[in-house]
Amino acid sequence: TAAPRILRIEPSSAFAGASVVVEAAFDGNGTFYDETAYCRFGAASVEAFVEDDTHVSCRVPSAEDARSDMPSVSIGIVGEAPGSIPSTGRDAPHTVAFRYDAKPSVARVAPSSVPSGGGVLLTVIGDHFVDVPSLTCGFSDGSQTPARFVTRTRLACESPPTNASSLRLSVATNGADFGRDGASINVWPEPSLLSIEPDAGADDGGDVVILRGYGVGHLLRSVGSVDCVFGGVRVEATWLRNDHDDDAVACNTPSAHDVTRSPQMSRAVVPVRLAPSHSSASTEAVLSYTYVARPTIRSLS
Image 1 (spheres, helix red, strand yellow):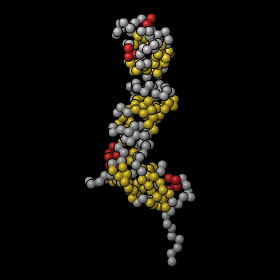
Image 2 (cartoon, helix red, strand yellow; image 1 turned 45 degrees about the vertical axis):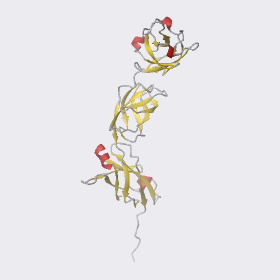
Image 3 (cartoon, rainbow, N blue to C red; image 1 turned 135 degrees about the vertical axis):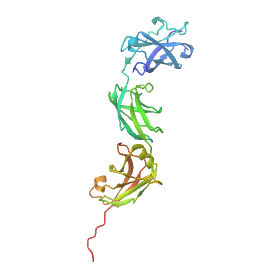
């Protein structure tokens, strides 16, 4: 059987040890299912694994074995000697270009603490990131999320939903082969907020409110301390715990002006959440608090 014509390789750049997919065309009715194929990267030949009729995957050899940082890639058929790679004369005459990339590495990620429900935008700092559609963040629990290339040293992706208490994040340029260097992320349990008492208070702030909900104590045991977040304003929360109940915190309300940035507003309804003190992320669970103008006494009669 004549060697197929190689059409493209995806991705067209990767690091040694990564897996790439080669698309080829056969003359006549041949398919990869009928043959034992191989990929040749420069001077190095590697076994090809059948994906379907016209696609095989190959593991990228080292640049030293290929004897080039930008080797030509061809594909061939073993033919009558299964298990052995023949001379270059059995390669298809058509080749495609390939470039070696450095293995992506991750130095740190922000925020480094996220809720278990996922969906938090992560900024990943590292090196050797590549602007390709297959750029992916991988996590130690097996989950993956698409990554958005920003620069060679920065990308963005979302945290996944997880039951793990911590995750390690690494990056793949081809969606499958992840660099060994990663960064750790602490995962905190998402509480369910039930009530805020009282749910209304004076617009100049300073009132004490109590937030209750399932899992609040679990959250505090996991992260150590939390804040109440009124709109975007954080205030320190005090854990109210006793032998019978540890699912409540107390905090002092900020002023309506600090929360809304509107000096004219005498009544405002704002969202209230909890957030670990060391994390920029807050809970999905949300309650409402209403600011009203504090009554004033103008005269007594």
